[in-house]
Image (cartoon, rainbow over all chains, first blue to last red):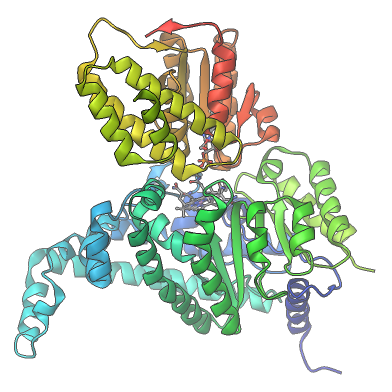
Length: 420
Length: 214
Ligand code: B12
């Protein structure tokens, strides 16, 4: 007789189900683990705006939906930003519900060159200085005063540091910046308390969180956040060496960030949304030269650190499957958007779990029976290895999904997904 | 020399392409011929893109070369010579969606392929698209959207065009990250495109024969 409670046993069984599928051992049943966000809050009866502004409503809606759907894991909450914090920080790169967008609209990121083409040298010479004095003021209005900071070594004198620091702090616009930061900090703490509570509540209900850490591919870090799509795509031709140098610079940092974050949450699963490396974006040669080295290193380093990377392969990954075959088998929980499943079986069938794939278009506009058929076909296809986890393609379940379709996806797993 | 210009663009030799174009223009070559040489290159690149032989970096770079050269040609153009256009197209990212990268590539490809394109921008309300369609009288309306929230506004645009009796003369194409046949059926659009070249192919098909002088 075990002295574990029933929920503890449930928690372990759910985690084992997932881990078995990832390591390509047949679990008792096909796991259903989704990476969704605003679907859960809408399903729980609140608007996107409420979800971003009322933290306790958000947590209650989340848990109510989890209870109803009874998936194996509870989706992580990284993709939620507290609206009030975005307001105080004066985010320039995002638009969100009630702030440039309607009440029930997913927040959106403005893809732009937050670092200009002729700023590579400045970034590479002094990345921290560049980020503090140039980048941050561009993405958050409150950091505008940082743009006036002289080069940091200017402060570095044991004689003058105390008074110079205090002089800065006394300037009205710096003082205002710091007051706002304190306000944002309080708001963020209030939000974090709710998030921690959510993790705790889920645990008490017997559900592990899908992920406890986050990272990005080094190329995406430069492309998504610094140079934008247009910028990086032109850089591939106009300044390939600088682009590569910037990507190389961030590589060890994206790994370390993910490791630290996982240590903080105690959850070994690291979500990594992947953007510009898919088949539609670049050629195989460009992928091999600019994208894959950094991604491969990130994935291997995370595995070495005892973590389970969850790369979200957004877009069509079919042409890249041969690269993924270089990764150690059963260690990477690959989440897929669009992929030729026959080729996947051929190239990765005995190496990587197949997770995701149920099309967002179907979840939003289709009928429950179509979803059930789709899921059944997936289960039939992967039943031989057990390397399958059900979810919507990539982001998981889109916010606009019809509730009955998501319920059908969930039922299908229980109906067809029990291994003999 | 014109052939060399076309090749420089298709081979992604940016500096060479711009230098040749400059030389041609300064030597008194008809600016329209220079632009045509660029368009020829864009057609080749478009074909390669559709065949999976080149990708987004090449589309964006080629579009940028074309833009640089067109700007240089502009002052040389005689006032009374109008560039012949294939037909009129309206492009918009629908309401609620602020993504413009994909839409911009579509616009630049249509433009490079000789269409008279009116770009309404992002987050464009249904009524604005319909009103503009009445005035501009396009043969094709192209709707872009990256997120699933774009499906309903797309459907609403098709319905509104129908209601206004405009669907007889206007074909609707949709595209963007999550768009597929399932979504086409849902919205009632005539077709969906997976990439910017699809937009050119459909627009050509639908405007075939008709040449508006812009
Ligand atoms: C890059 C990317 C990002 C970047 C930049 C996004 C931006 N603001 O531009 C960043 C990192 C910021 C990002 C963030 C997020 N993203 Co994102 N992202 C992508 C990704 C990988 C590529 C989009 C892109 O730039 N494509 C490149 C352009 C060139 O392609 P395109 O727009 O599709 O256009 C081409 C064709 O579609 C076509 N086309 C376009 N319009 C038209 C029109 C016509 C008429 C025709 C014929 C053709 C056509 O031609 C174009 C050129 O060939 C997609 C996945 C995907 N594969 O699409 C997800 C995706 C759009 N993101 C998604 C999500 C969920 C998010 C986030 C919410 C993630 C999160 N939870 O925080 C956030 C915030 C939302 C946002 N997008 O702002 C989801 C959206 C799901 C949904 N429910 O709608 C997607 C679809 C991934 C997925 N499958 O889950 N994302």
